Length: 187
Image (cartoon, rainbow, N blue to C red; front, side, top):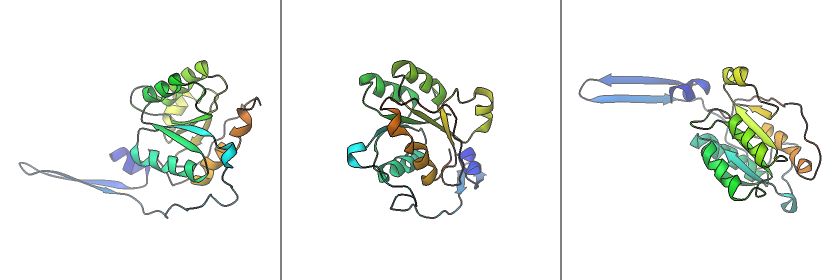
């Protein structure tokens, strides 16, 4: 909780009184409401082209934010709360998903390990990783997967997914990592 507040530009106040308990007050910065339309200049995909995206995020608020962005852009989403759950979803039907968008830092199997396992199962599955922890990425790197840095905006997520439809139709994936940053989502 404290890490989430600090990463989001907020703070936590803790007051404790013996025999009475502890109160945590979480302060988060106010942000603009999410747009109800696709970000300016970015169009939702057509129904016939809709991709099914596996979203892997252990933080409830960030998971909701991300799936809402993708659904507003016309993508179908399945949300897994951890790497193990995501792996089970893909193993059940390896051709079910057109892309994966995964947090890097999660309890249990992290996003990089999950992406590597999925690459072995479904080699042409596009994977986009997301993280706000630069120290983890400095140690482990992205292993060639695309990266959207947290906090991210709806426009940055949409931009990351714009290149994906052609990838599943036999085109070679780009090898360059795309990194973006904005103050809207963080975990």
